[in-house]
Image (cartoon, rainbow, N blue to C red; front, top):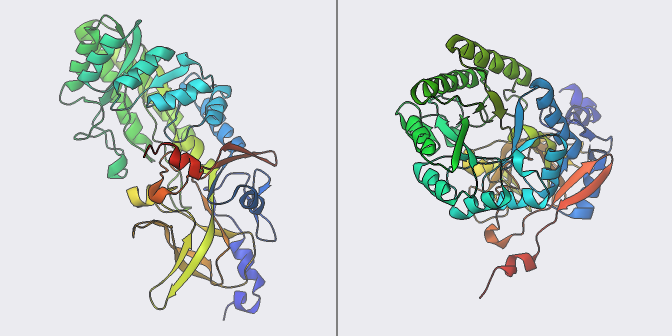
Length: 446
């Protein structure tokens, strides 16, 4: 017998502490078991906006932008819009002095509709269609990161003005991350290989296009990277390439974009990203290599996405059913799933799940939270501790869902995508509405 058995209230007290490092800084539990974010009650959000619902702490997003500017003065910080983008997010990024990295005509349309300055936009992506390139030309985006010889040729023909471009280089640096999000090593679809000479060939191709102005190089070694040493090695290799290009072609490229991929915690035990350490070591590596080679220090750009928005997001679900399989497992089925969080199916990503909205005196037991979709792999979290008396109608919260959740959401099983609710100063605000059946039928021409 333990003390929590003698005094059951202690069991709740032990559970009433939020896991460190994975919730918005404003998140707090009340003595009634409710969760507040930005001063707004989870119970109230679920009642007003329904579930599933993505909630985004605006102040947390803005603080992460300010953290980057503080740690990296003089460095351009471009938010990677693929992590999460809507018009409100684009406006926040603009107001916080960020640049913006977009990957398609659609993302560019969002930025354009929010009035994001074209000069601070980079068009990226390993495959850009003619429509993407035409949209960039129409809006006059500042820079385009080219990723193939075909794209260089096509952009050279489409460019209506002298278009600034960067060549994306695959530097051969292992970010020590999941294989599906490792982009800096050989034998994958991104960029031009440094080792094979493809990067130099791409530089020659750009220089041969009168309508293109080569202003720098770009690399991105992957996502969810905690090892600063990987970024240092990539930076050194990129500076050496800048130096070699000056010797061979007489061009001194003034810009170096070192991408993003900075890790966030999804579980409390995950490794964290040392932003201040990264900022110091990156600048030292670039400055040292430039001084050693006698090359002028380039203007640096980084492209964080996940690390700006992930921890600011929490997803709320309603429990629909609980199935106990004696001696095997307890399944807790909710009203969302892989249509609003594809990451567990893609990367075997793991999450914390908490019951909120009421207190429980029952012991916790490992349970598997699953979605509503017709796939055995529609699992939100395996073997997470939840109260033994959990039942249909309970409210669940999943933290660190601000990045690559709304962006990867789908209409599988013709399920409408959830809304995005921004919270700040004790008030909720709808920034992306829930889809309706009319939305789902709107594209059906049958």
